[in-house]
Image (cartoon, rainbow, N blue to C red; front, side, top):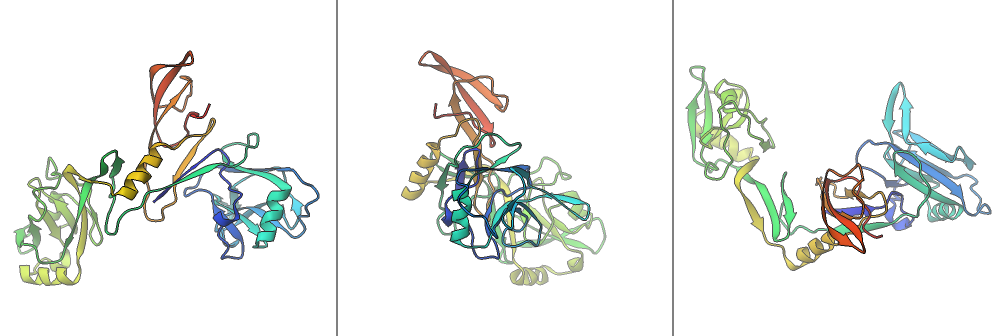
Length: 347
């Protein structure tokens, strides 16, 4: 996992941060569809743009998902351009900055000729791109599951994972239809967070089955459920007349990976590398007026709770604040927000 902390200009000028394996060279600006705008202003008009294209694209590497060029074959289209792209009546928000021809010479010409800014929302005066990259490396086999978080003393998980492979103690259980059975095990009943009623659906993640309530599986609806005593119940209509041994044989060849909420969070202490990385994350700083925080991980998304100290109590993007003292005669405020923009820490 790598946290990327950027100022309002989210377009880097380091060629090594761009992917150059496609028809276009490109950089992914955002993981979600959101309003972006690109602004360009001349800084060296002696640099020729002949044959050059750059701007937004939908796919990054090519034009398969549309392009919005602010520079098209050497001709500047405008000084600002949004990432909205409409095709066949459907409008999308393009996520990539792309350039063509795809080589370092083109890249250097573009950023030598222009000050370029890509930002969220509407265009504002140019500032040079700044960013901090803050890695956090998981050890082999280590997981941060849904709802898990990093704390001062280690990785906290509020969920656990089990692989059901047929070696567990299983029993056949009645349903509301005579001769149709579901299958039950107590493999996790001592640790799973139990539902308060049989109709409550526990937040399970399973690789093969849909989460259901205990009432659902009792009513012969395909799925996996947790009962009020913590037992796992599975109903699969194709297996409704199976014996326990037949079900366990199927399970041995079709393992179920189940992630489930637990009553007491588990803590895994950091190794020395992780402790250093966590400390660095704690010392990250924000930028004037706007800071963009994202995760560059391809297999992990994160909600970020940010706490900062600022001189101002009037920022409308702050969800929670409390005056904690003064500094050089000015009041200091403690601010907490879930992701998004941060108050300035560097003034």
